[in-house]
Image 1 (tube, rainbow, N blue to C red):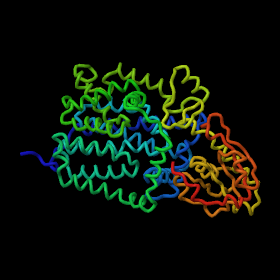
Image 2: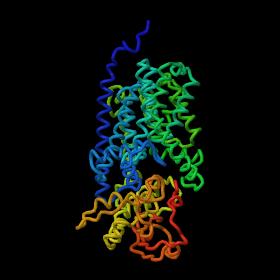
Image 3: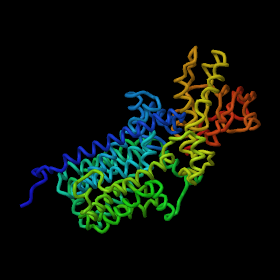
Length: 527
């Protein structure tokens, strides 16, 4: 007679695993806080997307053109709880990174890893460049691993005999929230379900509670789907436009696989690659081949795998099982492989400037050149001396100051009716956030910025007069003069560290020509 899930005795190792996971999560949190404070001290400003997410948080909805509602809610909660300073808006992302570390340790425990394996897995993730970067700014990417890992942990615990009622519902809730955060989780879920169906663990899926979890996930996503229908599926248009314009860098399977060595940092490959092999062999980690197959299927579906951190947990367990006679493993230490972990730490410190802007721009250029390193590139836009992930933190205050000066030059009557138009959501978001944070005397109350990009187009023109516009655009003066009678360049964005496409004029335009009537529908572009 087997024990039911309800009468399952408490595992005495769980308490120790929880304590260890909390300790490592705290280290991660403090580390990310320190990085934010340091990079801010060096002069790095808000990242372009952060402006946009804060603006979305001020226009809460069940959906957005280019992302789900979770990141907007994250931005709004962060702003309400902590404020809108650079440090404040990144607190929840840092906390999400700490939660990911915590889940990594618990997952290593759930896969029967002892204390050394749990510690090694969490340490490997803390020094992982990809997560140092994504947990260091306001974004949906910082929360993404939480939803993925919670789904995996729920399945593992069901297969280990824990309550199907509880953990399948946890799975459904995490899957649904993950879809509201970033739709790419659907490909991971498809790979996971397929892997389960092709292994003996398929029996876990064939239950009423698994169906209930699926139903819960669908229920959570329904409002987002309803928003898409109401707005004529803007996200599909956004994705199609991205493909047509070749916005993102596309890597072939081999190049993408090799990119994981940089994303996870090269020495970590000694953990995640053995982790995948150990899962596929299902010897050192029992009944876990389905998880290894999930990796293979997801790679085949997406060709865009970001080497998820539960493979670090698997690799740590495999290393622990392979070397049981080592003193660190025998004595249950949290530093079981001191030489390996020292190499991992030193390598991560060398690569740290590639994942977080811990060097001043000029110093970073010299450092990257001397070591023959370069920043990762996810989009095809031409970049300047800095990679886009760093360059997108420069030029915003210069832009806002020029716009403010142009606005102050107007009469009170014109200030009531002027439009402030920006060519993209970063420029518009910077005006909305930094323009409200200025400390000039008397205060300058800029009207809301408008843009044709993504959700800014949906928010409209705010009732302004298109006959009078302060415009942040890349058009040349002779092209603008074909639409307006008066064309005046009031300033130019030219920060040398910003992206090249942000080197543009700022105009004060008067008198829209009848030959070029204004139509807001023509300004829309989802990209």
